[in-house]
Length: 439
Image (tube, rainbow, N blue to C red):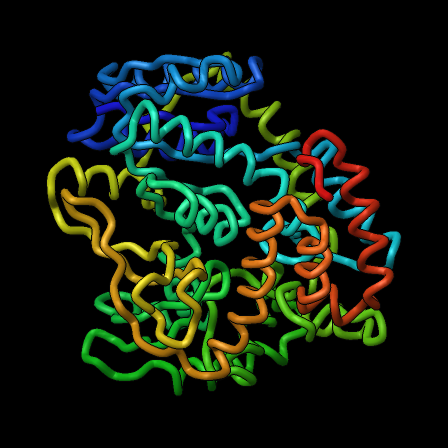
């Protein structure tokens, strides 16, 4: 089995996914092709993974491929391709995504999935992923493409619509959603044997049903305890709990993410909401700086210290690969096109997050039916932006970038149309060669 890791310089994530594979008796003797355009980061990843392999029995074999000119060689013959790239990195592109909108009075928290930051991230990443897909069609057409890069729905949706590669988008917010909620609310005794149904879109999929091992609905008790948590001034996860009372259901992704996916919480005319809901503005840049510094320290320690065997993480990738290789059924929450109306009240071109069965034949999405009307409506405010951003990437028409930003719920609720267009123009100029030329 050959797994190619695109963006292998994302060392911590590569270590988790490939480490998970090395922890599997079925997958541990695979070939892992590491690809990146940053030579130093690629070499750091190779060194760490080689050391991990040594302490885990030395079964795996690693190959490294540096630069676009070696991309096809990295992909050739792959059975699975994992994508974890970040085009433009923290500096300069993430900085631009935050600082330019801030000049116009538009504040963000994470800016990697929706909002003007998510739009720009998608526009600079889609051309690269399209190249990946075209190369795969040529040198590994039967490989399964596992995408972890955000904005998940825009990137996965583009590849799913405009290539022939079997693609699924993966986000660990699904598998930790109910577990983290129950632990947060002191309901750990309900974890074992719980049953749940989650569906919607990435980062805004809904916990539609949750019951204990005996089939008893847990939402009444969840609502009671959530009401108490919302009164705690120090509690950080308030936006998602607020969703329960105003929309009826809890959602998969964190409150710092969801605070910027709508028109409700980050509003310059209501600054008190930031403190009321403990919304961490400019959170992602802070995380980037901390991660960069943390990795420097960790890498130095790993160079001189001993390496511990890797413990399998909660990420889906190795479980999916294992399921396909052994033809053993496994269920995931995956991001797939809504073809055949898996969710009946969302459009077919939308990339939705639904339960999927995995087996030897690949990924098989499951039909969910309709979402509650208000949940579908919330999803549509995000899907509108996703579809217009994909259209902008496909046509290279600037008008579609304007329209995506205009219809973004947070951006459109804070800025007028002329200001939105001016901001978009400045962002395009600031990103320079990281974007294709729009007309």
